[in-house]
Image (cartoon, rainbow, N blue to C red; front, side, top):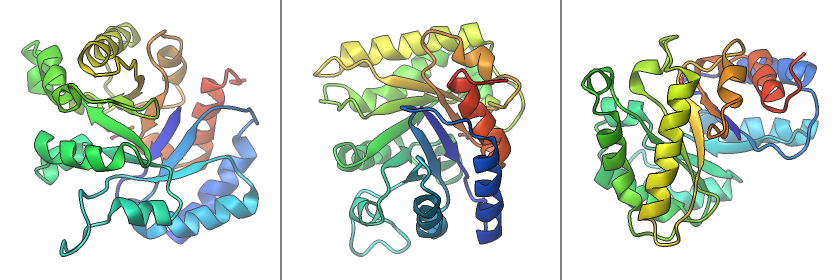
Length: 246
Ligand code: PGA
């Protein structure tokens, strides 16, 4: 599973250029879940072009609100389904830090979204927490929102250490692998149906380091910010995931 998170980037021209590069670079392969989450404004435009070009890329969003109605600026789950979005990212660290998103609020959003679209729940520790060796405690706390719940197999987790996002720094592939194993164990032992989730890694993934991550047993894919903004590099990462790196 390889997912692009465009954050607050994009324009109609950028989408056109991105798609041209993606189609020039992507080596066809079946089965891999490839998703892109542009800003809400561009979902329909992107989807129309993907359908026109016959590409196997799912459209999704970067967040969804917990209900509809008198909630100025919010986007509801029914709206994103209406616009043919297949997934939503939830709990991204930029939402937690810049927009003060709490575990409690994310939990409500997750409850609404989880049976309707594929939910990708982001978790990760800050640099300070990492330095204090608190990573596992922080992750367990963030994972507590799914405790005791029945979680569908479409659910996945993105492990994104905050200090690795957009910085060019990453944990070693082996360290990420260990953390992913830990996440899978925590989710399996704490959910009602003992689900073992797909776990993506996010944080400065690019064409040069992707292979080292994908070789690890417990790294099931990636959530990609910066390197997803160019169709060529994103397609190359998908190719690497599919074992088609030349
Ligand atoms: P990055 O962002 O790939 O630019 O580090 C990842 C993310 O925030 O999901």
